[in-house]
Length: 300
Ligand code: PAF
Image 1 (spheres, rainbow, N blue to C red):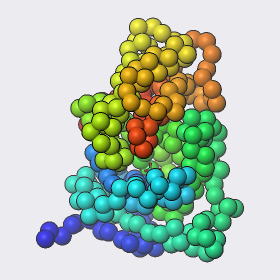
Image 2: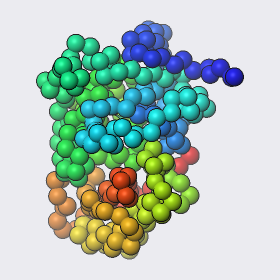
Image 3: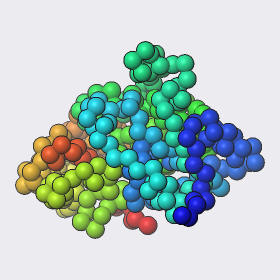
Image 4: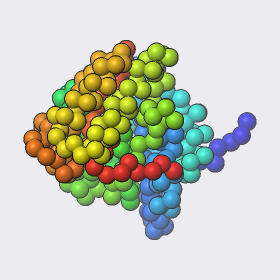
């Protein structure tokens, strides 16, 4: 058996000590928060963190605070050993996990949940779309990410553009709380166009085929934008047309101005646009998005 060269810790306390040691040596620290079940998309984040920082640490924690549906939490894929190998290959120095009680000592209620006064406000970017379809989700994300920032004090933190609204929420949180610089990395796609996601492993063959319609719809909107269409309703209607060809339950297919987040689609001609989709393929909920106004950044 080959021993891994990265440090793996089972408790946040050990991780906190390791990070303190890194900072005391005057080294920069890149942090990639994850829920495990890692794939190439996460590896891209770790590679980017390794390129920009002296040390890189990764959290692997399936955060119960951000799951509304207990079935989604229960079925979320978990593979710590596989994850550690992928992290090592991508240039990570330390990976850690922990329990909710260890991340929030003395702050849990009798039923094992976090006392409500310790939940963080996710701010204005949590409004609509994911915020509407997953009530409480961004409170849960902001609370754990805020806690990571507080205890690890990283120089930079890395998030994927695939979770577009999440990236807006955590960037705003970091600015409000004096947290790290938030770096958002482009979505990594399979050759079929589907965005890498830990949930893809739960798709059946036909479910995967249906999932392909998300990126097809986004590329269709992008094509229309490139032809000069600037109306949000026209752009989202072309997406809905493509999504209707797949066996999907669409939650939203919508367009926003990436610099001016709004609860509903902007009216009139847009200068900048991001298209966002959430749809269920069977039991699996998929999300994806694409900037229409800027070139889709290249993958490494
Ligand atoms: O994007 C995720 O995997 C999670 O929302 C995060 C940022 C690790 C917080 O639990």
